[in-house]
Length: 267
Image (cartoon, rainbow, N blue to C red; front, side, top):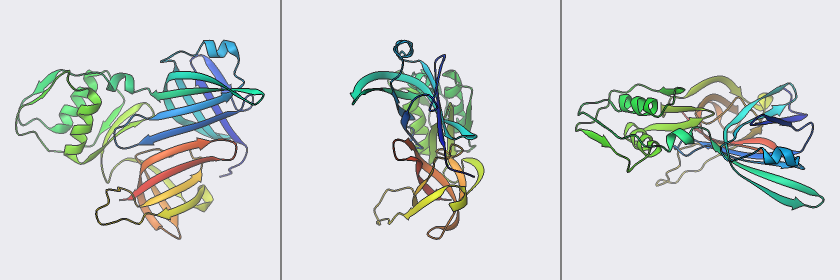
């Protein structure tokens, strides 16, 4: 793999903007705790007619990587847009949220009988919300008593609770919803080492009462193939060769960096 000549492309509604034409910086944050993916995209000297077409809930797809090898790092919708002077330039910052949020923030008003499997409840609620792209690891755990959901809580809260009871991760990942076991995830078949983009590995020193759920902090060149909940093989002098799950991922591109920062746990 080669990591030079960075490339970024933003699809915002019907508009397509690339780093060949304008400077595009971004920060994308993703995790496995049930929080929505988010992105902050900054574009310099964006045309006025393009800005006028960008409204809240406009769909946005951000692709990044390198010339000849790039892909989606964020899929969602616009929350807000703000202009700011930057010397002789105007920088437009677009704040974005996961596209799943529109569905997950809604409420499901329904009750389930005692003995219902938690995974079946999660599947039913996700489908009732109109989400078709999802994956739930099977589990036989059931509620011993009747379970009632009302408009007092939204789907995100319900899924976070179900994931906690199952000891699962709840993930919004680029247009999909996942509930996966701690030792499970999206198997990428990706060997991460110095040849494939690994820059730095830092071992996490855990205290006895620490709640950290990860073992290594990792920095790589920007690798779009990896996201939160990815199962990868990490190979370095510090870690050795370990099968790991990505717990958090941040994709960052600015004047100096075009990288991914990850927290991973050994599985």
